[in-house]
Length: 440
Image (tube, rainbow, N blue to C red; front, side, top):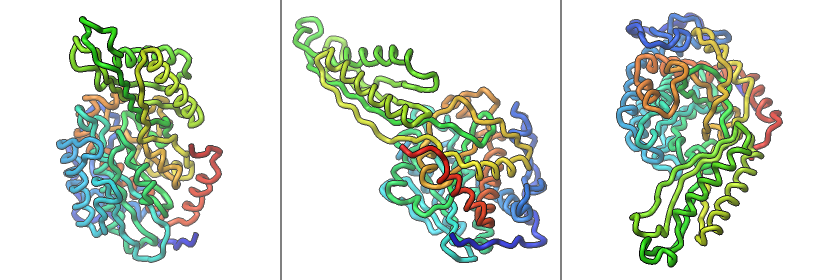
């Protein structure tokens, strides 16, 4: 690929009007996990330290705008595919900073694709800055996606401020439905990630690390259909769809004994019948299957289908199994991870290593399309469970605000290195193509 090198400008520094230091953060998070105060006085990591300092200064200057967006999204949680207000808010901010915004993007009403060409011209590199903004049903932002929206937009604002110095194109992708439905997988299928040379997305956590080991996962809907009858007068005339569902849950519970410790199967009953005196003719459940190994995951799917069929056979009911969404394992990119670690270290962030306990993310799907990193930074004390009220409340604290702003700066700085250094882009692609894994 043909990339132009960016010459650092001499004499740049913190932008005029940077905010005064924020009030001290009294949360129990270590200073290394959630630094306070403006970013600009801290000397960023080489290379391109001067340009990175200017990016940090822009983020500092935009702090109120970044955090205002994060807090508005936190206060108005919208579940997967329903992020109407969040998406509109993000699109408005991006337009204000010069991006050409496609919203909706593709078939998803709450997806966004925004672009801003670099002033140096050329078709490459195209660097993707991502954001998520869906909430958890009934819980709100228990995964802190409001901070991901704020940091992604913040990084885009910073890069837009120096776009005239850049080759290629800044590509912002607002990706709905991470928690259920795998919005990124849909956007990939529709070509919205086509042509990217890299994709970067921060995620909040209770610890800080760049390496991640997300599990392959899909949503599974199971519907059993039977025959209604009076539960007291003539139950023998019925076919009990609830019995089938209970048998499935029992079978899954026994199956877990033989599953590897890293594999996961979990589910809930969403429909269990209408009245105690009616034999249920329809029940419905939502399951999720997960594994860190793509081949093992495919084997789990086959076994799960067999358990469903067995439950239907034993109860003389019929079953429908529908797999949807789908998150893949992460395709590791050591070249990009190393640059993130170096940039974060300049702000006192010590990488704590990959978290052995992991969920799933459709960012894994992106990692099989282009070089990708999905680093995590702490917004809450270590041990705070994700997908909980505690984590939801932590996502709107001063500590989370500081981390959101820091993440915006680090995403922008790492993206700048890709714009400025053709060899880093080439190294990232070598990692991508040379990994021994294969997409499933």
